[in-house]
Length: 367
Ligand SMILES: Nc1ncnc2c1ncn2[C@@H]1O[C@H](COP(=O)(O)OP(=O)(O)O)[C@@H](O)[C@H]1O
Ligand SMILES: [Mg+2]
Image 1 (cartoon, rainbow, N blue to C red):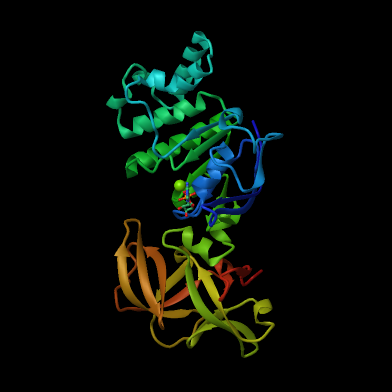
Image 2 (cartoon, protein in one colour):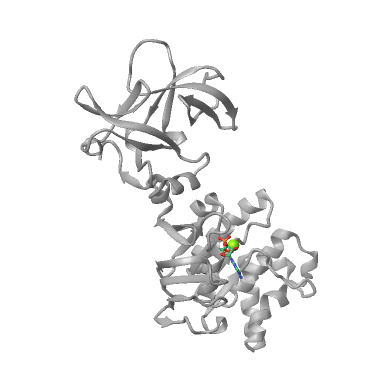
């Protein structure tokens, strides 16, 4: 049981690469925190500093009520699971899981009890006597997880533990891991570049980019209210749509215009006169209606470029002027390439971003 506090952590490699840049983050006791971001953004480096495998150029790492910045890994009461799970092939499953306990010279009876319990948690009980070389990739990864949890650490660190598994195994193991960690109640930091994994597992997600945390919040918060264009684009499949629109007052009403068509906009955004902003809207929050001439509703008009059947839904890629938009509709929607569509985004799902910085500038049209 431990809270983790990162205070202004910086890591510079070779005197110039700022792999982690002034990161501050508090992870609550028993929380499952996901570090999410593209390859190279500094996730592993941040994790290794928490573990004590790298030393920060600046900042402090506090676990529980101890400043552990100057302590070696073995004195930090943490366990780690890595992408390359480094299970010893010439040892049995039992000996692999028990390895850390033996190093700590725990007595034999307790080693047996704890190893069997950990193996049970990851459903490896029938395989305890098997050599790890004889296991599947998924089973080997379970060994790595069991080896970490058997130590009963205050903090569990996992760096892309599922990324070497094939898609189906990953899906199953993700669900198991979620249940397991919820039962253990160990403070967990989990690194991934996979936004679905992050959404599925995290109590909170810290989205990283170029060595910094861009946004930290619950999965719903970061998905629904991205702080920047980057976050909106990184989470979700397809990514959030971003359309460059012009804010202006039309017939006394604040409007976001794209060509001849437009949507109601928050009055506060138009207070300072006309300007270009980015309108963010997710593909699943847009109603697409075949356009039958005439009536000028609120909405945007797009020409359908491609329709792709995804199984339960259909993904429509349309063009509005020189910009593209993606819309998710029912699989049986009567939409074909070439069709003109009236697109009506849900008013409370509209998000607004500064056109230059990409930062969020306001909430929905209603609030
Ligand atoms: N030991 C190292 N020496 C030099 N540069 C490194 C080292 N480890 C990581 N880096 C650099 O630091 C940045 C962050 O890397 P990393 O933390 O591994 O990112 P991620 O885990 O998010 O993919 C990258 O630019 C990477 O090349
Ligand atoms: Mg990494």
